[in-house]
Image (tube, rainbow, N blue to C red; front, side, top):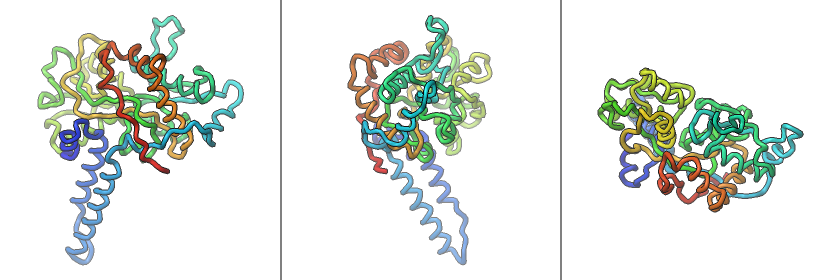
Length: 345
């Protein structure tokens, strides 16, 4: 985990938490391999090979948010298959959240039969408009946090747009677009709580996270290497992030660790809780798709380029409408960096 801390200090924005987890675990594995074979020399040779593999993996995952394909508007097999759907089935099938306030949620007071809306939902409509010519040609599927990758791999959805962090582990299983949002892990707790942030005040506290989330990965790694205070209980995982807020309200958890963007929305829902301390990671949300859906990845990246340029109805307008009230009017801290497209195949 010292790798993550060091990179954060050197680069300002560091690497995503899951990258550090993978690298730290790989290094531990390399160092702890038992001596085997005919003698000590063979054992050392095995260790050197494992360490070399770990270093290469670390280097390959230096910036997972850059491991995406260059943008293109061309249709390929994946997009043609979507366009060839007939009748009512001619829709983009997208995995989303329906419980994340201002990201993907149903507002019973909207006067529109509680349709899904939010920052992520705006992006989905933009993608559908570009590919199918109709922003409403979407079939939304509510996907729990830990089912996002399986839903893509099983073909239940064409993509997932659900505050999904790009990290090293995930790029092994799915393909990501360029980042469309920047955030970081933070602590949410009752205003009356003695917890002050991701620090020693978490000792002996019950922390809730969503299973399969980067928050849980970070906590697990930090507990393993001693960064997280002793006695902190991280066993309280739930399928959906909003369930953590409920546990906090019921007194079944002392704190929540989640993306700062989501934490701010939950604090807006419940005035008795607040964000404690600064973000302790820097992470980037991306649109997730199948590994071999190259044409769709390129198309989404092209859409994101145009979406960010569109000052009237694009990224900035969506931020101002949905997120400025919880994250502040200045979107600078939430803007992703200029995209880089380092993936070639």
